[in-house]
Amino acid sequence: SQTIHQWPATLVQPVGSPLSLECTVEGTSNPNLYWYRQAAGRGLQLLFYSVGIGQISSEVPQNLSASRPQDRQFILSSKKLLLSDSGFYLCAWSVDQNVAQYFGPGTRLLVL
Amino acid sequence: GQQLNQSPQSMFIQEGEDVSMNCTSSSIFNTWLWYKQDPGEGPVLLIALYKAGELTSNGRLTAQFGITRKDSFLNISASIPSDVGIYFCAGQSSGTYKYIFGTGTRLKVLA
Image (cartoon, rainbow over the protein chains, first blue to last red):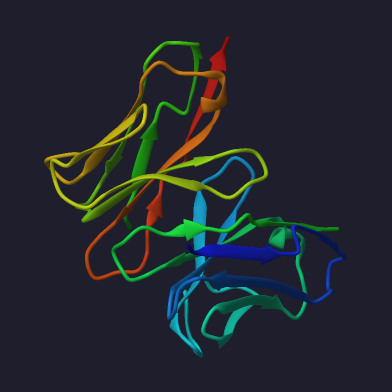
């Protein structure tokens, strides 16, 4: 069966520091991968998606970036965090377009 | 842009009662998904709907893909305390990877 991992689970970072969040999927090949951000009490906002290694599409312009160095690894990064980057970051995968997405456990980021 | 309205925003119900919530869209969707999210965790997929008119059950949960393709409903029968959480709908149009998410229905069950 497929599983999706995210780490770290929780992160507290100062403003201006760099960020690296990692997501890995097991049990499937060539998944579509997604990064979402969820603000407190709000819905999910799609940040990036990837259909293959090195292929990244950005949905929202911001100071975040994403990379996919391996088939089942998706990384969310920032060179300099802003206060507004605080939130709950969720990684998700799907086997294809127009089918269900499955979410990881999330990373809670607090920027101080 | 596309909008997805989910209602109710929150509800308190007595244990054993049935629950209904719905989502409506300003545009046609080809896929509807329903998720449940517990505090501090990622959303868990409950039901996926891929066809207009489709009615799918998962235990005490039943969801329907509206015939107009602009709405979907989730029903929970005989609610229990562990049903507490936030329920999200998500819809997707053809030709896009992007799901539009509702703002969630917060369910609280009174024992």
